[in-house]
Image 1 (spheres, rainbow, N blue to C red):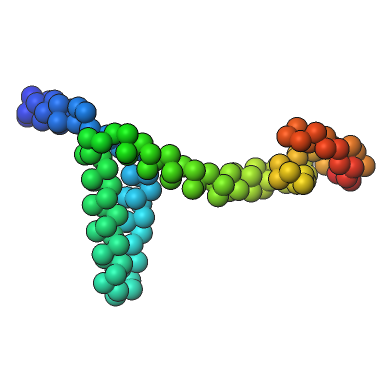
Image 2 (image 1 turned 90 degrees about the horizontal axis):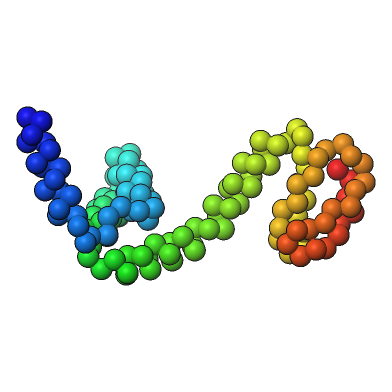
Length: 137
């Protein structure tokens, strides 16, 4: 049995040589497809099942594709699209984690500035643009 599984794994590795494989966009597509499937179980809409099939088929197509450069371009576009929401979520998590010890301010350039709480009025220098803010911490 073990040798059969080893041979099967070897054949699959050989099959995947020169193919794109699995990345963050595929992970997103699979989880989105699962979400559509679960929603389709509770809400009887055929469009949700079609969206589920579309996500799963697109993820499989990307995984087995031999056009690696095109798949990388899709991944780069996805990462560019998801960058700002991901940064916003990370900042909110950090603000929640540091809520008792630090205070956050936003500079006019858009950068977040973190200062310790309870220091009174302080000068805060933005690392991104160099602007000096005077705020109470």
